[in-house]
Image: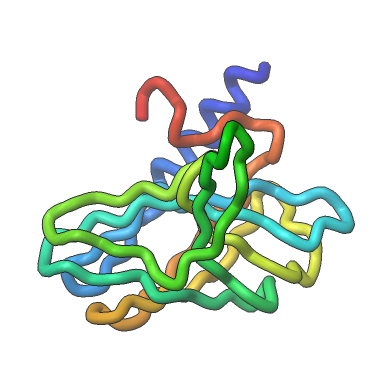
Length: 151
C-alpha cells in the first residue's frame, strides 16, 4: 500500500502544471504537510532558466507571514540553516531546491498544511518579475517526490 500511495503522490506532482515567467520555468514544486502547532514549513521546486541570468529575490504566500530563501551549511560536521538574500539563477542552467539544501522557508504558518491541499506562492525575480504558482502539499511521511526512481 505504501508504494501505491507514493506512486499517487508522484503522479499528482508530475501532473501539476509548470509555470513560467519569461525565460524562467518552475516545476516540481511541493511542500511537506505540517503537524498541528508547527510554525514553519519548507517548500521545494526546480527553476530552469532558458534566458539571461536572473535572481530569485523573495516571495510571498497567504499561509505564512514570511517566505525566505534558505540553504543548509555544514560547519565542522554540524548542519546549520542560513537565510539567503537572493538566489542566483545562471543563464541556461537549472537550480533545484530540495531537502537538505536550498529551499523556501515559510515562517509563522497560520494553520497546519494538510496533505492534498495546495498553497499559492508568489515568487519574485529581479528581471522576470513575479510568478504565481500553485504548490501541492504532500504527506510529511512520504519520501521526497524528487527522489522517486522514475523522476
